[in-house]
Image 1: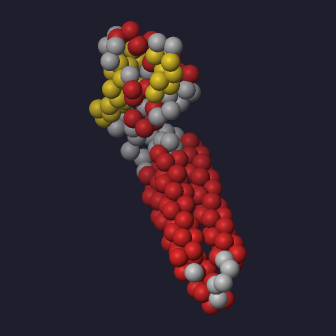
Image 2 (image 1 turned 90 degrees about the vertical axis):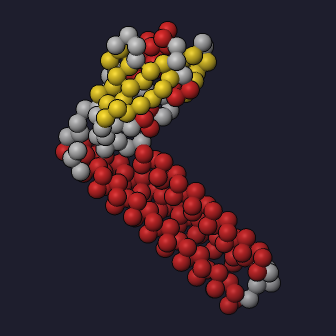
Image 3 (image 1 turned 120 degrees about the vertical axis):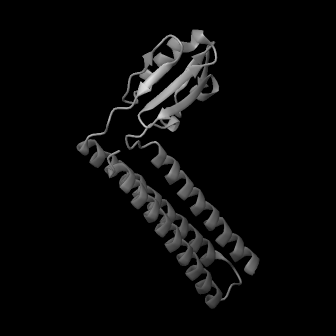
Length: 186
């Protein structure tokens, strides 16, 4: 009996951890004015007719807090890389020096910082909703468990609530750190 309830609890825990990981990944795409090679995640380059991730055809580096360099493994890819970055509409234009692309990250204005915080808060709210939905699913599964006493069901619902509270507190801490990061002028 407890095995079934334990499985429900463990599944809820795994799904909440996954939701938190997704939230953290979503926040990495919200740039706070500092250069990061992660800004180019998702940029696809036409590599001999095949869409390929940019990090599979070039070295990506951040020599300083405001610059990303993209050095292709094959020089004939420079124009394709340039085009792919422009098409991705990331808000910056690469400079081609004949050997590599240099991307200067413009400083973020105060208004843009506030907009980025709103975007981050939206992701935060989505993560909290996902966690609450996981709690609801787990509690429904506990209630549908046959042959479980009311006391045992109540005990597992309390464990699931404690897990939910911890997960939401974790997302709150991540959000507070991200907001501080966004609002800090480098």
